[in-house]
Image (cartoon, rainbow, N blue to C red; front, top):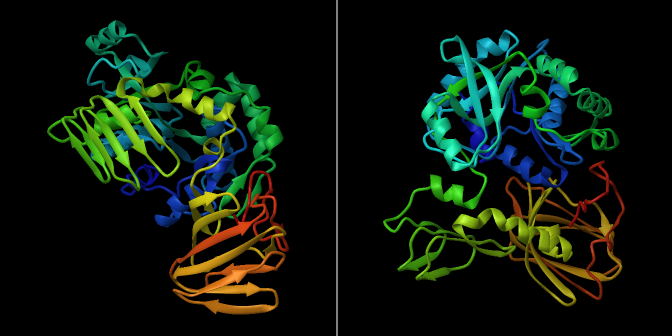
Amino acid sequence: MLQNTVKRLQPLSVTEPVVICNDIHRFLVAEQLRALDKLANNIILEPVGRNTAPAIALAAFSILQTSDCEDPLLLILAADHVIRDEEAFLLAIKHAQQFAEQGKLVTFGIVPSHAETGYGYIRRGSEIAEMVYAVSEFVEKPDIDTASAYLNSGQYYWNSGMFLFRAGRYLEELKKFSPEIYDSCQKAVGCINPDLDFIRVSKEAFTACPSDSIDYAVMEHTQHAVVVPMDAGWSDVGSWSSLWDISNKDQQRNVLHGDIFVHSSENNYIYTENTFVGAVGVNNLVIVQTPDALLIADKDRVQEVKKIVDYLKRSDREEYKRHQEVFRPWGKYNIIDQGENYLVKRITVNPGEKFVAQMHHHRAEHWVVVSGIAQVTKGNDVFMVAENESTFIPPQTVHALENPGMVPLELIEIQSGSYLGEDDVIRLEQRFGYSEEGINERN
């Protein structure tokens, strides 16, 4: 969905996207952008989540520091939106551009197709130009009767969370109405720490920033907000049930992804990544299988998945702390199997990348190359390991691995020993320059 968000902007005259994400998602986002050839030191990392107003402020301050334009336009988009009619989407943006250039803060209101209780609404005011309205008010998610009244009035739009305005103009209004957010973000960006393709801001300054949405912090107060209607088959995919809503269905209204067999089952969303799933006589369920876990929920209650997350967190479960598939600067790894005194990973090393030189006190490692070629450093020896070949790394042996080829290197790593903890990694060189907090460059 992140890639789709970027690709649908291709017909517009835009610079490389700036993506704002949490620190723990940085390598996943980087790989998504790299696949589109859009990775260019353009990922801003939030040390903590502080909602949309501060996130947009980070982008605005950062872009003003680096842009050749005096005050460039910012198009603010979420990565979890579905746009079926991309032509209508682009037309709405082009229509809004002239008003943003004039100093307006443009929000895009989705023309509602039904009485929806899951979205906030924007009430339009007077028409200031063709299909451009002053914003009368923002309203919270309504009950069904209120939503029906909004729909029948023709004066309300769904709040899309998409915006277009000049970077400096947004910051002017933010400073006026939410000076604490402005000051915290200005200080945070004043201490930028470049890190690979990432932009790190001051954790201390940003942690002190109040948490608020752009609606509450700016849009509800400014006299310069306008709404441009958009009718582009938009959907905010905030849950598994909303994915069911927008997906193609079979004759029994099931949405199926993966190796699945269903019998006498209707209105289900079933997704599986790596195992066969069979369903008999079940209705209105969400069934999602990934290498991490299996979710089974009533489709009308999927928002309660937060209860599961709370349980995992309270119980200090590994499922809460890490995924089976983990992205790193050099590539990624998948945990295939684990047990007492052993751990098996499938490792992918991107062309030209390498692990830093290191050693382990308590574990040995056996590497089997599946595809590609590996340059292995073991002690004082440097040698190549080709497809279907292997090498053994004893405990307390300095080692490193590099992919010198032009294609990804795939290998199986078998760790064995009395202790396999991630803190048993003694690095003998630092290659990536960023904080060790929450990071294990090698593993």
